[in-house]
Length: 505
Image (cartoon, helix red, strand yellow):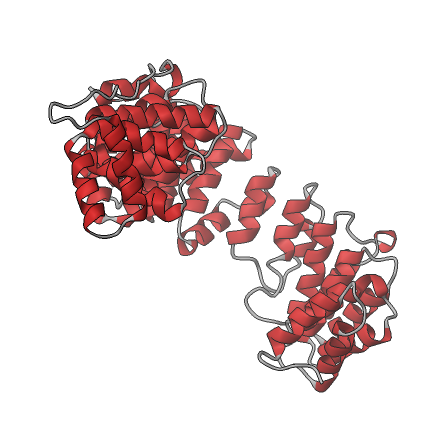
């Protein structure tokens, strides 16, 4: 019954009918609303025998007790935290089905009137799986905001009994993106908290995948993504992903989801390699769908498999930036050959940046020509530097990784050149601190001199990364921490990083 309603609740369910609080009527033993109210006050102030007797009477008369407790929760002055918990415990102990509906309506009213809701959420949580029908109704209430419905979704996933978790999976792929995100996060959280819950959720998703209509591509894709993200993979699910990823007749978004799943699970290497090769021709000729599939397949592969494949497909020469970036990220680059110059002629800055990030990435060492080239790219635009600051910073970082004496000299020139973009000068200072043995003292002296006030904060931050802080570094950070208020906090943080537990004299 609940599973049937869940399939439509996110998008189409009407507002739930108002659940009235039970009308208190005198019991045959003479217990009435006045006595219930008295007992409620007793449990708020007493901890001894009177408390136990009052609570027992309330639990023996659930209808009157519920009305009295709700009235006291809403009364002024409001009960304190400890008193509120006592009242909630009484309500939870009553375990009356009609009370669950009342809690839901009270929660709905609180949400709509923008009053605190935690009390009623806590009560529903205490009901466990019995709160599921009420929560389903509230989640389908279009009068509530998506944010509130998302909160309720999280509670629903939290309280649903393990044997019923699979029923919730009919909600996957239905409703707004915001609610789908909240549902996905809640399911993953529940799955990661318990291996038994994870198995139950996986079985529910697998069942929905088996029953899903082939033309419901979006929902199938969402189910695949969730299954790979939340739960451990078995041979059956891995085979499903491999089949869908490699099947050219599968919908594009389903193939994308299947590739993503194989990457998450570190599976399907042969299928991914075959897919990448199969898509490469169209991708390099400009097909965007083929480009996406090829890119995702490469990224899903382990690096030791992606590297030879990127080299084989000659992706560094691709016009499409996505493919060229992957080429420079993975491909084995030639030694003794100028591969950097062609990369810096590419129209897209992300490609130029990706190529620069490969310079000296495995081991230091650059020839003089490369050192000068990096300094030019990272220098002033008026002197031939790259107009994109991301590329300029990447060139400066590469110059530092070269660990070359001539490169250190050029980095100092960049720091002191006012025509160079400010963040590139800051990166040059950072690279000197990281790589040049005399770099930390050089930057510390600049900070002390105050010659470049607009770089004072980056200087202080960079010094915090000093491999072996010197007395000069210590003095610079202490003096700045006690002086310049605009930089003091950064200098203090760097000092604590380098000299934990110490203080400036």
